[in-house]
Image (cartoon, rainbow, N blue to C red; front, side, top):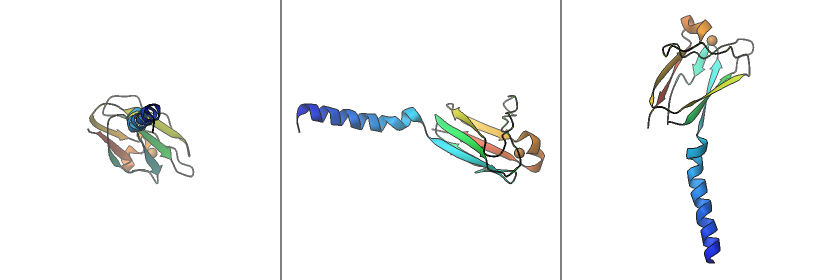
Length: 111
Ligand SMILES: [Cu+2]
């Protein structure tokens, strides 16, 4: 293998190795039967969380109520919402219309 090929190989390895850190992982949380599944997830900083409504007819939302945010928009069946978590911390959330039914979840971001 010539020096140029070796260089290209090393650059390729370097790119592939660093790609996950750049792109970030995606974790999917399903909204079904008035529950978030999984209800609690632990992720690394930079991870994208994607909530997907898998109901037949019912809408839900994602509201980081304790953080004092505005309630999220309603998500109808097969709609989704994504959010990237860059900061280490504890992020509890609720479904605004179904909090009383125990539709709550938690994202834990840890190194
Ligand atoms: Cu709900």
